[in-house]
Length: 92
Image (cartoon, rainbow, N blue to C red; front, side, top):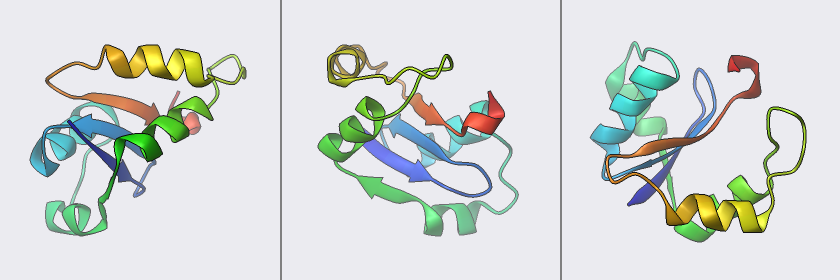
């Protein structure tokens, strides 16, 4: 599993097997991408530790910090077919 950060037009942190699957998840669950080539160019790949830190430092919809223990449990149960881990708060 690889981890990708997308920032345009909305932020999302996605766990996926490859860039193609990442873009499919972004299209399906975040927002429709108009220019796939540009999206691939702007997509940032990151390591599991960096993605873990982002999730651990994020906040729930209720405004509480997610935390390391919850992030660890979350990463232990990642779906093999990919998942959106974080999404821009204004989309919730």
